[in-house]
Length: 358
Image (cartoon, rainbow, N blue to C red; front, side, top):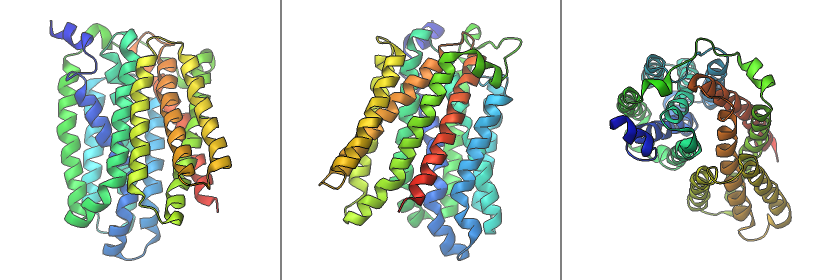
């Protein structure tokens, strides 16, 4: 009866630990950017401190890439426990780092630990039937978006109140507690749903074998590039206008969260390729709106809202498209990691272009 309940209610308490842990993990991924100022105040100006945000993102890219290439089964409970240990211990190392260089190394390890998101996604989608998988992907991505909002809006203020080191230790404790709840949830998944095959094909082979996977990955790459380009420019536009950035950024992020949930629901009734194309069209419309009306009052806000909505629709649809190519959870987990890895590379390029844009 418990197993049946888990399958019948994928968006309820049975999957809440995965959603909450994913949100906390994504918030941790963006933690370093908010801690540059307090770290500079503590150690003084340092190149190593400036490298902390980039080191965190580089570590995440390495972790996700290794997950796609090496990990046999991203739903394995032991692997989930080891990944949780890596993230929490890295956060503790960051809290106790006594030099900027050690802090940058800790950020690299923290980023690698944050690739835990791939295990959470694979484990959550393996706990439900195929018909509910896209809806769960929407919930997981929405949890991550909420984590980004918390990291951008709440972390700087929290660091000023409790200090950088205390904040990192508190984050480690939160991840550990939520991770224990995830491990308990994993125990309740029926063995038939999470069993791994004897052999999982290499990532390169899967990429070339499945056209839907290639299309989803390339679409994800371009969508995430546009998304990060927009988020690199948008705060600077708000600052130039002298506006209070917290309110419009929060509204945009909230709209993106709702779009992720809606996309997961639409996947059950419509062709996933069409949903992904709809997200792409929204992104193109956002770019056109930024060029035509970006300098008008609230023109940038409208363009960024459309960009965020289109991106989140595309993210959910592309992940669901990729995972629909495989029947077993181990292969689905590797396909999800492929899409994330290529999407992240596109995002890094978009962010670099946005930061260099003057």
